[in-house]
Image (cartoon, rainbow, N blue to C red; front, side, top):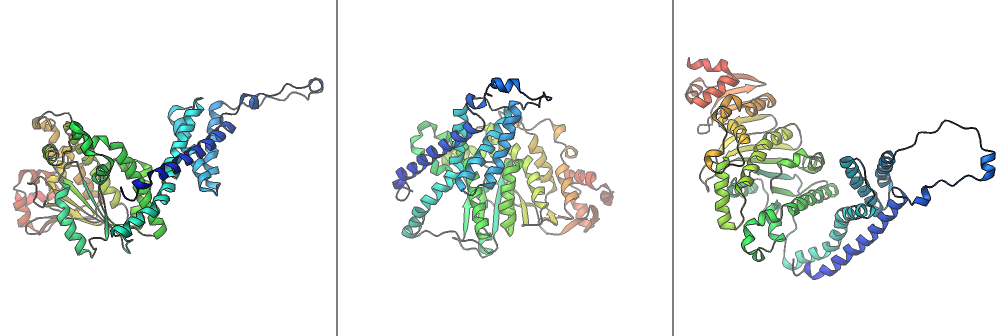
Length: 471
């Protein structure tokens, strides 16, 4: 960074300033000609004396276009003008005019008359999108120079790209999976330098000078929240562009908290156009950790790494994650491509031990080892994020009853064609479900399982007919 990019910082800044000045002039000119014409251009000249003497017969007055209608019409025209433009900068100009002004009108209902402010917003948007690509091409030469001189390895594009994604709450213990991931990657025939890792921690370390924070080092994670979101989005665009040019992507390991992304239609479209379209196989691991444990582990992590979060943040992330997990699972199950292989892991155990499997499967089948964990995922959605002690985390007991938290499990049975309930130790199936129809596979093992009160309650709800075996 210091030897190859920082040394050229003045050149980079000059490129940006030159671009900003150019696009600001272009935006000012377009706004003045379309949305903010001068008063003189709008005033209709008075007719001459002869014109008044020989004026034609009166016709019914035409409907007058309101200011809002006129603004909407002009803004809508920017989209097509951008699509028709051959020059990339002109296309970027009209794309930003359409996006920024359209967003303002959509939110407020009108633009207002502060043309300089609107010009600033639009010019900044152009520089953020088009400018980032321009500067990217500029620094590409120096990055490639660093690769050669320092002996780095460029991540190769894969013939059959694999994406490995870790999903869990903050401080869920995802780092405990890294030895397993390394072994899996090797078993897939991927070399150690043959895949890329995406993690917010990498961005934070580059964005902040931790030594300069003093006593505020505890808030380092919060200080880069918006910046990490911006980098994350730009990375998605970069990978998509790379995939479109190469018709493939590198092998990727993704460790980032992105459940909220799938509520956004725009980001969802980007992810599908990149990962679903070009990835051959996606492995997704859902790490399940009790909310109160994430608070404790988060504090212990802070003591080691110097990065802290509030209890409210940890518990809020838990709610967001456990609400998002079922949505994310069913989202990818609904697609035939890429091949989707998932696993839920119970990380309530002691740190440092590889977590046992709760369930694993693909688009067409799933093995369930711990049905109770599916109940817990719904329970974790109902916690009190303002809790001041472990005892205040969970709601009243009647809200935690199995029959009030069994929806996720029932959805799995409804949406996944083949399901097996399997004993983790013996790997024997005791109940199979084919298209919603329950069949007892091992009566003796099922009878043993139903001695567990919680398991018995679960099966009494989802398949009461098979519980008669113990009567």
